[in-house]
Length: 462
Image 1 (cartoon, rainbow, N blue to C red):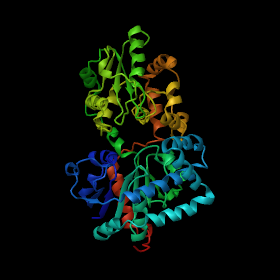
Image 2 (tube, rainbow, N blue to C red; image 1 turned 180 degrees about the horizontal axis):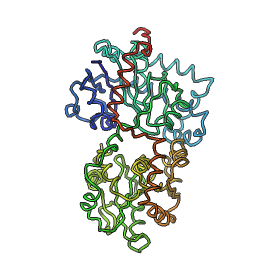
Image 3 (tube, helix red, strand yellow; image 1 turned 90 degrees about the vertical axis):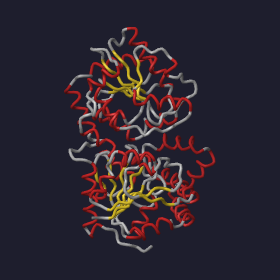
Image 4 (cartoon, rainbow, N blue to C red; image 1 turned 45 degrees about the horizontal axis):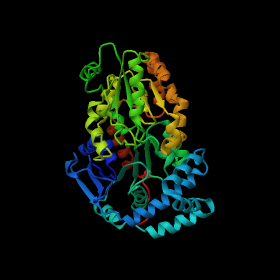
């Protein structure tokens, strides 16, 4: 039995690694302690409700977090200077930070200023004494951290692991993480990525040595290995989809687009016969933003568009500003993607998930949104989406005028078993879907690190 310290710094990691049972499964054979930030806005989950045996909290200094954030932005810009993504991502940071903060970070990101700035900031930030005290008390055999490669623990844990001689294993959370993030204090002993593409990018952009990179797929997609908990025919009957109709999923974005306007175009096309015998299913993104002027879905008399039932309550709450992020269940997503014939979405990971299910897709990138939405403008130009469109057969629709014609092309691909198998294979480059559970493979990785003294970092003192 090994002692494992798992550090969780965001509700998204709670959903992707705890609520689905992946990390709690380690408790069957190991002594696991889950460590959360104490009273922090990033973790709003009631910790008492989590299915874990032992948990602790650790105080997080706002001053240290702010210092790391400043250094992080300069580090991202420093790394991006040598990539094709420099232009759009520099523009994104300029818009996000504001003029003064951006130019300060830009100045410190230059090769001749960065190293000095990094040393000064690390001296000001100092050691994380609460973390060091916890590690001295718990004395874990391995540190495990699911992460977006930015956050409250990501830098401190690398440094603490080196100081105490404890192997560190980081689990990549989102498919864009290696492309747009940066590590400031070296690499963990193992970085678990989704597939060959994220492995390549993590090596090239983050500087992680190849022998420290392991591809296990995505923990949140583990549920996709098994049959959905509701069969497609039952789900379609529950929605009231007429027999013989094709079911087209419009999966929303997190980027604050006027999605009701997009749905109205599809509603009109079905009503006019341009998209005959089609039912459109609207599934809002679980982190959706509500743009100014977007009509409430429930205020309109839809005849051919319906709301995904598992997202209806969340959507209503977003309209009142009651919630912003919903921890949607991937088992529900699996049911939906198994039942639909095809998928339309603005830039979202669900395009990849659709391909993993063998469903054809359209990436809807309307020119009016690309001109005015900085997040959309940036994402489509970054390497993870550029390579996605190069490697995977996904229709790109760039104007509202082309939406109906491209949707007809999309529906023509639906039901083609040869095409479905091809895009499943293409998707494996981005996210493998192994035959064995993620938790089992992770356990083997951890035990291998713990059992091999040569693989453990030498303690530098703490």
